[in-house]
Length: 59
Image (cartoon, rainbow, N blue to C red; front, side, top):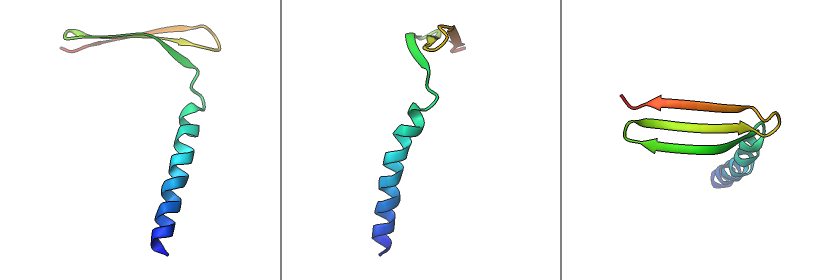
């Protein structure tokens, strides 16, 4: 009986995680550059068209 509960929880998790990840995800990655000196990521909000640029230095 315990194995059935574990399988049920596992299957429920597999079903809910993708649904939760897709909710509220209105950003599309436009550019993602990784170099030894740092990273640059550009995303665009698909609803508003707003562009966000994130820069991280590896120093």
